[in-house]
Image 1 (cartoon, one colour):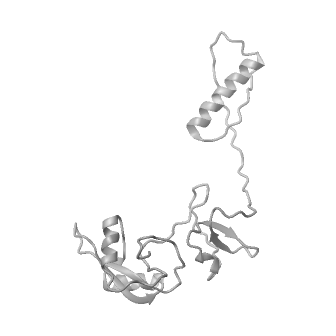
Image 2 (image 1 turned 90 degrees about the vertical axis):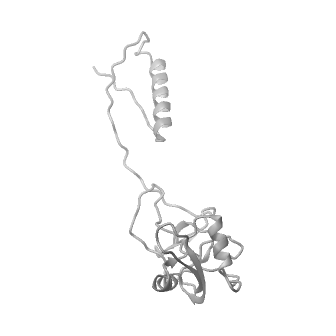
Length: 191
């Protein structure tokens, strides 16, 4: 966090000043403590847990003001650590994964607004802004086939291909709007 109240993501292994909080439990408000010691994010967290409650948890504008007022001297221009961190990373299909292959000490991880994973030729991961353009890899997912039996009572001629196409189009639109999944529908007429 900057003194200007803006938040950004940065490398956890860099050393910065940090803000701890203490709480007495119950409904007592948090008390913030600006610590003028340079530590990595994890070392800052340990320090806060040893001497206070934890790294700063900030849930509203009032608490941001309390953090700023806890500072006796202005922080460095690089900002200071609070308790928020990026995680868990989630795959684009919304599945979770415990597998990680991050590039060690990557300078690419110093991008403040980076939040999309990229892989280099050694298959090591870094993160960069999602707006950047790179080649990409797709995963093929096997198609699921479902047979639906319907009994239709209508005066329309179901042997007419135009009628069949219109019914499939309407079913496809209804299913897609309800589920967000693209369907391919076909007629299979019983002999």
